[in-house]
Image 1: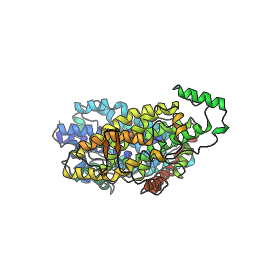
Image 2: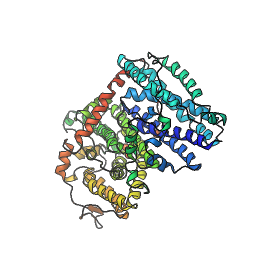
Image 3: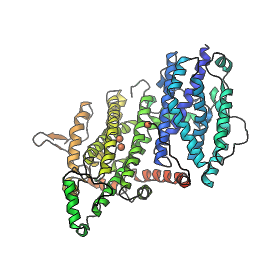
Image 4: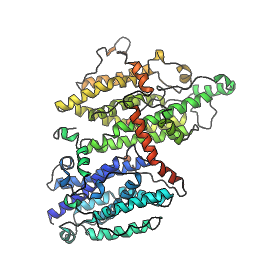
Length: 249
Length: 328
Ligand SMILES: [Fe+2]
Ligand SMILES: [Fe+2]
Ligand SMILES: [Fe+2]
């Protein structure tokens, strides 16, 4: 098993979960209704918890402590896709991102339940219940708001168009794509993208929304190239931790 | 958290003479026997009015209280704290939800209560009008403000209105986790590096005054509590709650080598009561009436959240609404 390839895969998944979990948690106390405050917080907790579990796997194969890895790296060292680092915007933007991301997340982890890398397969099985809630939540809200009022439909459509190129960036290929597939660790980004597209089209087809024109994917996140928004997010996240990184908080 | 409700503002005491004396006597006898009053039961107008006000203020305190702590979720140091604080603040929002539902059983819709909050017509716990400057402030809130709230809430859970008592039972169960989390945070700060200890001490110095205010004005100036006590709306006096809090937590604070900024604070072993310097009650009045360091900011944040979410709530009024409740 190619260790470099494996670590690359683990980092990008963990970083996605951490950064989007962090963004989702920014809705606490700010949601459009209390029920959504609570739902976004719950999903944020799941994502941050899952990122921790993956950093822990990385730690067991020689990487740093999860706290150090999460709180002490700078933006260039993060491998998350750019979509998850974008600011929350209005609720339509956060909801659409949640739908696009969590649909992919659920398929990704579903594929990982069959991974030849056992720690990852075990984790993927363990979190299936959490992920099922996330996709159910996303689907319900997209269907509701995507068929409700003129305003809700046009808001979602605008956010959808804006996010689509970033969503395609989730599937940016790794330099080790072939090794990962050959080793049976993960069936690869292309296979994931195909399934994702079918599922997104299916759900959007049940709303009054339209699939955006196919556009060029926003790539670079997987290589550490980020938007201007990631570093400030990390600075905020580590503000207290960095007062004394060796302290027990 | 958070509030104890009745310490912020009481309903006007009038109109009791217009109630049917026989129904009133039956109502009071039921309460005397320890029965719970349920939404469809007869109750004096004043009882209904005071309870709505109290439960509503409690709900507002939960949702406004989520703001000063909420701003520390994105900055919590390390996974363990980050996850615990997210879960804690999520609970607080859940408490608001439970309490709004309990208040709704008395006939006031949630939207109307939230309107009264953001227009400044309705009060919430005074303590959230103070800023949480550092991580240590958020630790203080999680431990000691929640501790104060538990003192109030445990008392109120023995009150006479069924839906409020049942909401409080659920809330108190979650509060014990908050208390443990907050205490751990403070222990780590107080026994950590020089810098951490300094941060914690500074937070205690900042928050002690507001914490003393938290339980409301001294009994000798609190008016109209007899009827509320008889009806089991108010279950313990402000001074009793404050004394209970001091008794339980001052020794724990001292135990950590932290000091409290009141040279007169000590327990009188003869009376069993704590003696202290009265906090500045003029400041309390000013802040509760809108002129505190964060009143405007807190309400502005809440108002913005309501405005930004208006289109979502409107869209939900369209048919086909389903809710999806999180697993945890
Ligand atoms: Fe609470
Ligand atoms: Fe609490
Ligand atoms: Fe939860």
